[in-house]
Image (cartoon, rainbow, N blue to C red; front, side):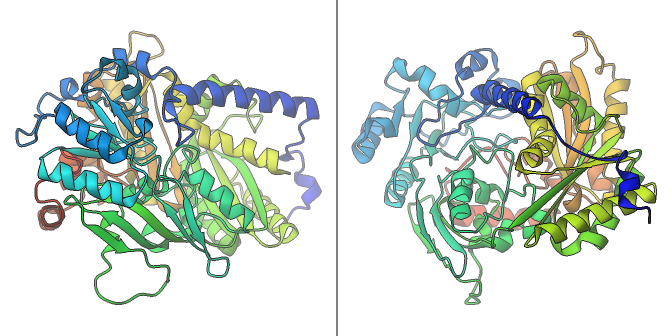
Length: 553
């Protein structure tokens, strides 16, 4: 193996001058501020931090217009002043009820709850309720069930499949006021929190105790842990900590008729009967509203290291992944894949200097987490030397401090923000056998190009077809970046993408859920027997169908 100093010109360490680092931080802060206003809600106490949402919504079509084949269920009642009066009496606080049914003054305030942050889905909701306790959630649902009022549970509204916004005039039950951390066991690592607790807030609390939340997302500053559980969010470090099906110890939920399901176990072992909590994980609020969560949190690693490198082919990416699992094994916490197209879009929006001097078809970001910084850094450096000597990796860089770690992660986490800044996006979150992972991007790009929809000028609706995702989980995010949402694009993409995945026995939803977007395509991943059993569960828990209608099944 080559001596380490011989690789210095190739394996570059980021050593930004202090002034340059300050400039970079200023740019990043400015970008975060400019991008977060229209698309993110950074506080549970004030969801209207969308700022430009009303203007956006004024030009966005309603979901009912975009998909005219979806018809309002005639069984559901129309909202009346008497209904509104009941909820006002129940919740008391003026801020807990946003009433667009009896007052036209609330139109601007209610619009952020009607629209998803991708500007793809928009409902006709006229009433938003924000309960502050499980009992209030129970009374809301009991009343809605008795009066046949449809309900949409909503957390941070960062979902990508239209699952958290209304289709018609459903009442939104927003969980932002139920945001408390209730208890934490510093010996076992069991955390109990309300569903409206923001993921980043929970993780910061755990950091002060030497622990970490076992889930990390780009939307962590906005998303709620109840929403994370309800969508079975995967995130950036599933490779290390596993899925929520394994880390959630227990939960509390409210059924459609107001029944409170108290399964808030705080033990790792509980083998007494059916594990019913699993039904609520990934159910997207269709069988009950999650109100509290108990979750197993691991010890926070004392040392984190990040490497970013470029590769010439997807075959090289697969080789690098195999080597990383072999050489880094117990300290490997993330292995992320990005193509050149996605990185070019981030560069276009941020104008930040790229981590590597040259451009490559593929990039990977590796994170290690362990207890010994020197040991882990040495191990990661040795891994990079080895894969470069073997010709697997063409170029790479190691972060030297926390600032540089964040800078490298921004090239991965900033993709979604960059895409939203540039226009509309058709997003497909899928699982495919690793060997076929990127072929979907290439085949989709070719199909869109052949349809005459892809180009560099405004006459073409599609700007780019890019791919990135969690290589460690065989999870690809196929993104078709558009200058404007165009029905021709959707017709070219669907059901082509789902058929392609089904042929390879993949999953049409790896971590984003089904929502409205994928409801009619569930048959590409689940056979009729499985779908039938799911419908039986839905009918058992919500026989009147008031919870999150028109979605999931």
